[in-house]
Image (cartoon, rainbow, N blue to C red):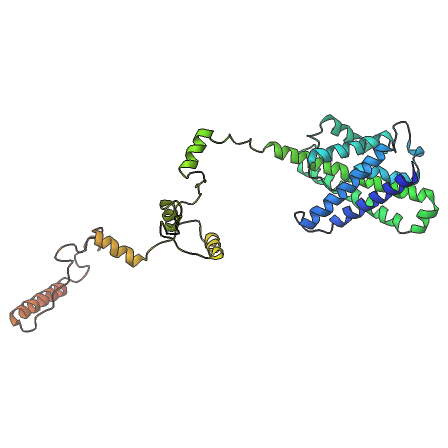
Length: 348
């Protein structure tokens, strides 16, 4: 391997690892800065892989002892710690990475079993095959502790840069630990990719094609090209008004062809957003009752007794005497027949 290619590979991989580490500090994966940083990291890894393939850096005829200590970390060229935009492309990169590790016998016994399961069912791969909740929880805790231990090991080995430059065994141990951590994260990412493939499989099929050219021409001629469908239960008066007066507002001479109102675009957009989904009332309760009464929907009165009573005439002495005698008779009756006097059934 030439020195120029060697330096280029090392610089590209170092840059990709630095950018991948910077991605962990972002709080949102939808930010423009995050997407640009991710594309830059992927581009560095792709260029790394192309250079390594062009110069045949790794060969299936070699063993781990044949690789120089400074080249071990270049195995990570196919291990991107973050998912790529195209799942299949990311899956193929991880597969090449795991195949290379398997060639150099760098996979542990548990990782070899996971790799065999991944080869048998690529899109249905899962780290946890059981459905028992307690077992799944224990496996997740175990893998989390393994990843934590690997990260602590890397931090411990990287604390002595002098030993890394002078001792080849320490440098080799550091790179192999980094490969082991990346392998651990690779299987987790492949599990997430398989889950996302299952989710994409549930996506509804492509909608049927649109109308024929004849129907489209008919709609275009009659001004029905725009989709007027709405989920609202009731349209506002302004919408009905606009649909009624469809067509140009002004003639060629500049004369108005239909009534229109000038509105501020910002105010119109605000009014279209900040409003409820249901139709608002157009009148108060009193106005509604008055309208119903006008239309005959409310009947007043229920006979002579429900009407307003006439005021007594103080000058009519004869009628006043009749009312007085009637009241005295009622008083005499209530005195002779007190309340409850007729109930003799329950008395002893």
